[in-house]
Image 1 (spheres, rainbow, N blue to C red):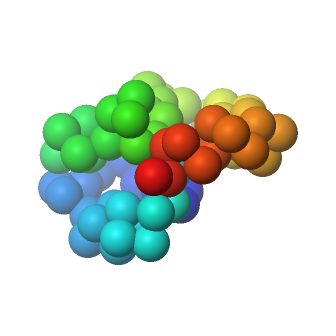
Image 2 (image 1 turned 60 degrees about the horizontal axis):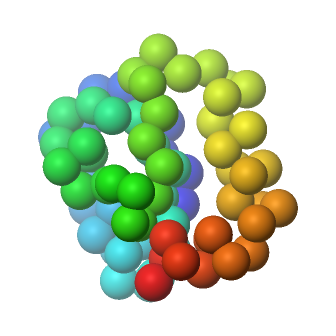
Length: 72
């Protein structure tokens, strides 16, 4: 699940991603950093660019074991 918002509290979509065993790629803003960590997703700097997000998504697409581990 990709979340690109730069201003968030604790987005409900993150809980939904966890319930569906999907890894999360999101910026470290608001409460996101309290939910997403190295066990369940990838955090980016709040100033991340579209290319930064694309690189993280590409990393997950090219690494099925990592994607499965983060989604578990």
